[in-house]
Amino acid sequence: MKIAMFSSEANPLAKSGGLADVAYSLSKELVKMGHDVILVMPLYKAMWKKEKQYKYKKVDEFEVSLSWRKNTATIYTTTIDGIKYYLVSNGPYFERDNLYSYPDDTERFAFYQIASVMLLNRLKYQADIIHVHDHQASFIPVLIKEKEGDNPLFSKTKFVLTIHNPAFRGEFDKFYLGDFYGLPDSIYDSGAVRFNNMVSTLKAAMIYCDKITTVSPTHRNELLDPNSEFHLNGVLDWRYDDFVGIVNGIDIKEWDSRKDPKIEFNYGITNLEEGKHANQAALLKSMNLKFYGGPVYGLVSRLSWQKGIGLVVESMRKALRQGANLVVLGSGEYELEQQMEELRREFPDTCGIYIGYSDDLAHKIYAGCDFFLMPSLFEPCGISQMVSQRYGTLPIVRYTGGLADTVEGYVGDNINSSNGIGFNNYDAMGMDYAIGMSRALYADQKSFYKVARNAMRLDRSWAQSAKNYEDLYIAALTK
Image (cartoon, rainbow, N blue to C red; front, side, top):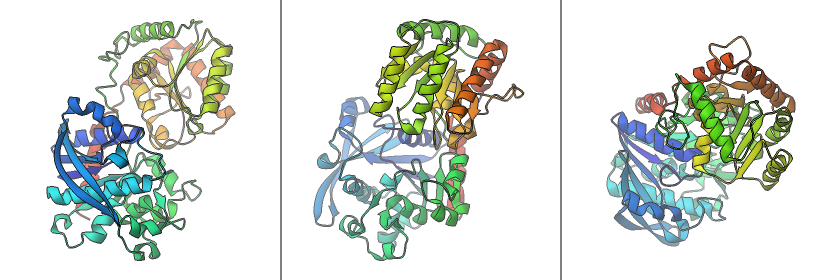
């Protein structure tokens, strides 16, 4: 199959979150399976630092019109892991310090999407599947179906949408439907692109695409729930049979305790105890912490209300009083950063906090902790819980989205199948229950290492996830 991926970010060139991991890792796995994959994304300012490493080559330049606005798209290409990247460059739109969160984001990504459709035409790339990710790319199916209906290049093309973050729906005033995209008001009046009395690119893709996915089966059910805060259930109910949940994979080469160059001691299932002890000692030493015999908890996360950081602070205060250790890596909301700093001041010998991000420290936390904290309010899929399992570090999760699909919590009588700790209610009692269960499991070291080995044996590669996407593509083509 010829597959054209459209994503506003992708590893290893630009990343702000899990979208970049999925766009790259899925594409890479599809290439391994024998498919022809191109990936089209904007060329951001920070990506120029990687120009020499990835040898960008200029291949095209053309004018893009957003109504009366005339802008130039310069196209660069590079090939990474068999994926042919096409990078859409424009100084005024993309030569900025950040990827998103600008007042003119609607215009910026309208330019990217219009340029992307023009690029397919100029390349004469006859895609079997056009796969768009999140709202920044979601109007591409609309542009093609509304403006390229007589174009034989797209006569057999099928469209797939993946919803990564339903909180962002690409909403803008109806005026810009014509002003940016040159599309008629009739598609708004019909309801095809209308949502909350605005145009929504994400909602539009749900209507125009042949298949819709999100990043876990449980998150699919959550989005279909009439009580969901995202309010997408109406249109998704209408597309019920075409809407599926596929759990993400992780990069098992990067996250491999047996070969990881960033940790103190490489280990696997057979020498897990030795590996844990060595990496834990190195982690605590690097953070100038003392060990008093209790479990070591780790957290690598944005410090955001969504991630359950408030629950972590209160429960960890109790655990630290009982001799546990805590190592935190992350940044985010100022109030939560300050709460973490206060926790460190209260427990300077056993609580270590790094405000910011360090990839080296992230690897050390996954390898050196006993438990990994992830009590999210909502989590469409989640990657960190699967990474921690690869390192024999048991995730403590709230059962939501992909966390519910990837973690079976230890409850005492499921020693042979459990691979973490879980709880249901998003409150202090639920979190305290999970921490209490982790302490009880840790006290029984034989059982603890049994569950940790269960976690390490799980297949978290992209191979199965990519096969599920391939099956979906085939279903779309035969629809």
